[in-house]
Image (cartoon, rainbow, N blue to C red; front, side):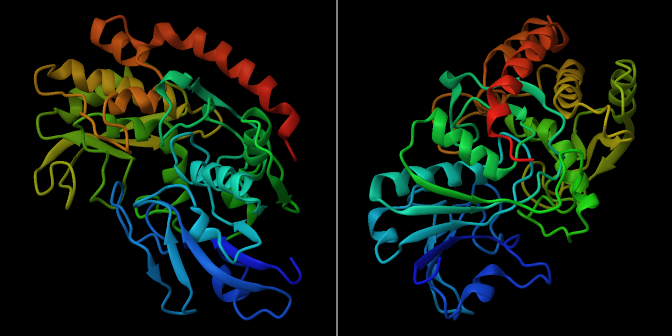
Length: 371
């Protein structure tokens, strides 16, 4: 990067080992010049809630311009990139297909390819490890900003590996450099790295949240509360009309490995059912190696709907810049899951097909694995 003018895609997770933010670590460095910052969803300081657009601003600490990539545009424009030689991407992902940071990276790759800029990806751990893959693989007909590429739900890849996959599979002629991690192994959970966990978004407070997120995010496609506005988002799920004990019994009868369900009441302070008492469950992961967040939360949604089909509703669009397709369908990457639930056939019948999709995905991504 010597002598280069740099742009930095960052958020609060963009820190050095001693928790110095990358913008401060890079600003004023003699070997290169940091000239602009770019913020993904939630903003460069992750102070905005989900679905809240962020405006361009100026960073109060460095004085640098901050271009929002979750507002009037999600793709870096030519004017944003003017005066920049290399765009640096340094953001912590959480290992789930829906998390939009990886698509901000993809859009950055597209913009760099179009405008002749170099992209430097500073790789970071997948907090769920890189050994297991789970869920289904997105059907491109249901592509959206919560799934722009046919990935498995829990994809098991790092952002650097995904960048290499995106470049080849989307045929991007981009000058890409991935800076590899040292010391990371695929079987590592985030706690095994010894690094501090920094919230990548307002409702991702702990690594525990990341472990349930590959399934829990699906609750956003319904009128159930996913626990936003509580201290355990995505682990708590409920609604004012649900019987917590009935829901917990229904889920316990599924005999799912690695998870237990505790009947709870909670009152969200904001978003869905704010200020209303909700009955539901807390999802307790008892064995991460055996736990499937994808299947667990689909069965949770199925059981909640079965309690009261009249009051349970699928969320209507718009959602994440999609104005036609249902949120649950773009999250699932297919309408087949919703139709299986509505018909009473159940999601378990879909498991063999998902397992085959995951096997094919593993073969596809094997050439891009760096660790």
